[in-house]
Length: 370
Ligand code: GLY
Image (tube, rainbow, N blue to C red):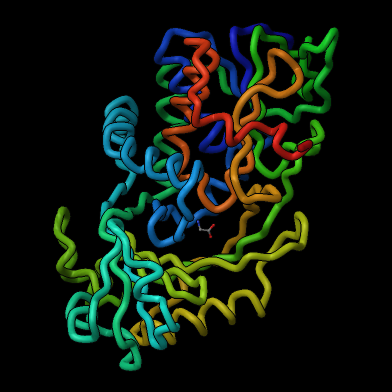
């Protein structure tokens, strides 16, 4: 099949689909090609929306992350309405329990986005924590979304909006006079006026971008029957864990509204090495049970892994490439789910309204050449 559209997006994960939907809603004719719509990092993520708990330092990345968090409620309402689906968006806040306070930690991290809780307050807020917890940080603005539900919502919205979704492998990007002329794919040649490369960790198979896969192993548990029996729609009282726990050891424990608990994630430089490892899962379970011992009686539900698209400075690459009609939207690393709405808005402005937000300057790919 050969085809032409206004905009061709290479990559059907959360970033590609979010951009496609934003452009389509503004009237563009959009095609998305993805090697496997189910393999995207989106499905593997934890869905934390955590600019606070991830301790993003001030600067452009901080501004980008907080701007995206602000966009979330409205963006989610819009998508849920289009698709008629629920995404599990939950502004539940994130708690970082602390057993040993480092010298200067209290003054270093105290800011408008987090609050120190003393021993009594933290155990009151979340019963069942390790008794050695002496206090902790409360990130009340941080939130979560069920990334798999969000992904299903984006896919449904894309279908209902009649975005052309093609499952196929892009083999080569063909250029002529500094522009992309077409892409060769397993489904035939595809051409467009503008192209967006949003293929996450797989981008550097198509062009030279400094994005490498950083593997994350994860698992989920299911809360015991005694809790599930008390389950009530629209009420969280029955859940043993009522906010995300995010340890200073990097382990996070995310309660879902359906009774699953997601635990993540390792961070491994092993290329595209598939599969869960004993060491990875053992490390995660050890950290999670230490932080929240109640988990030791919960049943294991599922194990999985994914590949975060990492750049050398851990910031995304957003904006035009050195091909005048090719835009890059990749390298979101640990924050792809969080950054989807702002990425969609900024890239749609760049293509549709030809407006380059000054915030994009810090994310230009040319920073790596400097
Ligand atoms: N956003 C958390 C992670 O990448 O593991």
